[in-house]
Amino acid sequence: MNNSGDINQNNQELLRQTETKGPSINSRVWILKCRHCNFIYGCDSTRAREYKCPKCQSGQSGLEIPVEHDGENWTREEHIIAFHLYNQIPFGTMHMRNPKVIELAALLGRKAGSVSNKLGNLARHDPALQARGIQGLTHGAKGEDEIWTEFVAQPEALAYESARLLAQRLNKPIERVEDINEDELPGEGRERETLLRVRVNQSFFRRRILSAYNYQCCITGLSLHELLVASHIAPWSEDARNRLNPRNGLCLNALHDRAFDRHLMWIDSDLRVRFTKRLKEADKNSNATFDWLISFEGRQLILPKRFSPDPELLLSHAKRCV
Image (cartoon, rainbow, N blue to C red):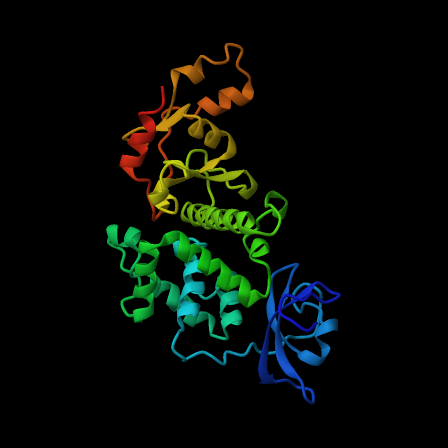
């Protein structure tokens, strides 16, 4: 194990190398992450190849994780990486016990409480929270305001930058960090780079929407991640201005997403589910799946704590449903 991202024989991943002295002669404290249970701990660099997870593999106790950068001013890069996490986890889970907060803290060399506070400071400038009278933490840094201003002006550029910087820190391809299927991308070249940017931004939007809805379908309450879709109200290809706008999204299960995308379903002004007459009459010999699909007629949407769908975008979509 020589670089961040390397994995030892026990499936422990090297998250970060530090210059903090280890317990052995000429050793340093390295930070490992268990790929089985996601536990993060410090280890002696000279023995990193043989470490087992202290939590799920009965390995020896881990060393204290260095926080050598805690207390330092946050850099622009760190602000952008924190912004990436801010948009990936539900608002109510941005506390220091969240495994994702702990992992980012270990990656940046800061305390989990510092990262949690930074996420709270970013919330101060979140337009969706401000609209609901939620202020986040009351004190913060200039960098948080600058990141939000930049995101409002160039959302796709900053979303991609946040993913790129995180991948760089993890020493992994951006495709892997964003769970993008490389088989769907062309070979090296400008076409690949263009499509990769689109996929990264779509991944950013998906995680932003699913986290806002606490990973639950807003119609059925289904919470199986593999069956959830971040549905655009105004299509990605038709409305560039709202591509990453979270109020242009709904968290739906795959079947209702398909009906919504094909204009067989819409959301009325009371935020209730409606189906077109065309859909209801499509199958005279209905089956259990079809009956389940339309059984949610009139169901009130389960709204998120932030990023409630934009009424004007919903109305525009409804007008296209016949």
